[in-house]
Length: 223
Image 1 (cartoon, one colour):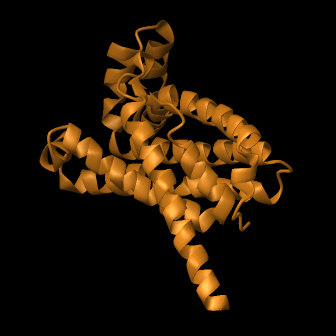
Image 2 (cartoon, rainbow, N blue to C red; image 1 turned 180 degrees about the vertical axis):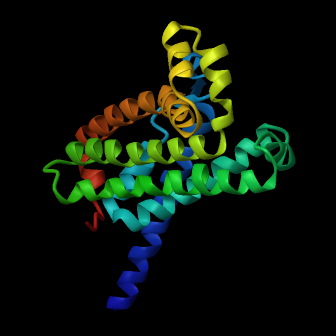
Image 3 (spheres, rainbow, N blue to C red; image 1 turned 30 degrees about the vertical axis):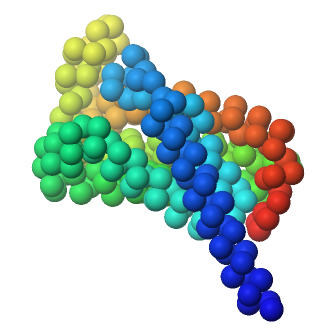
């Protein structure tokens, strides 16, 4: 009976995680806008919140697995929108670069959101845990995007600080830095233009969810 009960719990957990991932994908696909200030980056309406909720309820492991699933599905949808996988590979510099993009930007970047589940161990309220989890998980995602941008797309730094950042401080950065440091600064600023608003929106969503969905969040919680 005990094994059967655990199997039932696992099935229910899989179903719930699947539904939350689906909600996140829908929000990411249909409720996002291309941030004009982000020059290609987009900001979504709470699409990361379902992953933060999974990590809060079921821990880092389930949160990370759900993040990987979300990232891969997002990649496939992006490929379809851009005209197919072949076009996506071409736009990302060929197969070698694309594989690293997939590993960093679509797998690791979303998997680390699960680390936000650690906040559930010390936060006193669901709202506090979700808000702290959003900060932790999405900041880690931001750091992974910084790494990816610096390593894989650092060659865009000169263009970015010349044609995109037309203010004097952009030219000052270009004149003061070169090589790896210039690539790093480019990646920090470029990815921050959409990730920082995404973090803020998710934190707000976490606070609201913790307040109005407290019973649902506590039901079946394991950590």
